[in-house]
Image 1 (cartoon, one colour):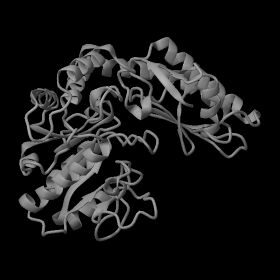
Image 2 (image 1 turned 45 degrees about the vertical axis):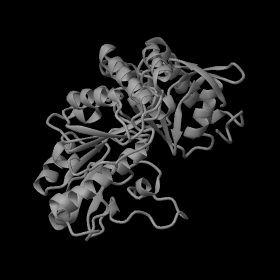
Image 3 (image 1 turned 60 degrees about the vertical axis):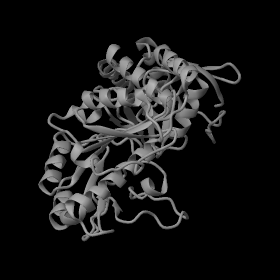
Image 4 (image 1 turned 30 degrees about the vertical axis):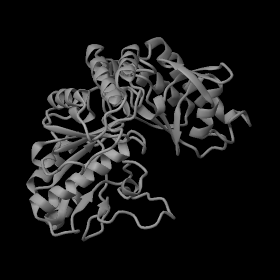
Length: 405
């Protein structure tokens, strides 16, 4: 699919065919494509002053920093361009905190994660997962989902190995990083109370609690940030990206508490374009949209609508699991691919032929539409996917059936 233009939730390819978008570039366009308020803010700022780099002061950066920290209860921020860079910056910050404040000996601080996590694909962020690409040379040491001493895998949602690991190795662990809902691995939601229990364990062992909200933030899961589904959770550091500027300009953010962020000095976390006036103008406008249009509440309501339609797919016999119910417009269907002709990729290709773009990965179909999508188009698009699931087994080859993008 070669895309040329878009409006809110409708994408148009180079041949003029229109598609309802149920992917949003993987949870980037939360406010739809080219939201007029964000577009206007960007245009105005581009004409006024497009760039102020790290050597000078950008007043919009100060406004954005003040507003977002006040909104979410943090003390300061640092900005970059991508989610991977935000995660990298969080790891850098946690390491320095560990050496300067916790007193871990040089080069011995660990940053732990969980199985099947996704925090990016740079050399640093790939190292955080238990699924690591080959042939890229040595990865970052002392990070990832394996306990330093026992080498046990720290599984997402399980506290036993985490508790054991903190008890044995807590003196050399700088931070524990987690997605409040795992995205790439298929909308995996932890058990109720898990995030708060993790936070308590981190506090007990003086370990920083880092939450990666790059995919789940800005209303996607029915709350402004996904960790807010659990009361009393307040991380030490939070990473944001994707929807921060409404998809209009690259920017990512690390928000943190003063006791952590204050270890940083000038230029230790910096990027030439990371906090540009254009990015900050877009980010301020995106916050306006998030709040003024009640985006999170809308996502939660429409999530119920989407879930009800997707449940109809169970009649096909190919749906094994429906994940993300109750978490806004961030849902996944897991398919039984044991029968010839039935696969998530073929379903996605068939849906595209019928005018709907849905995400696919492994045996999963992913649904993360714009949070501004009209209800009637959400229902119509979801029914196209449900029909494609029912039809795909009986079809032979069709355009895209063997290869999709």
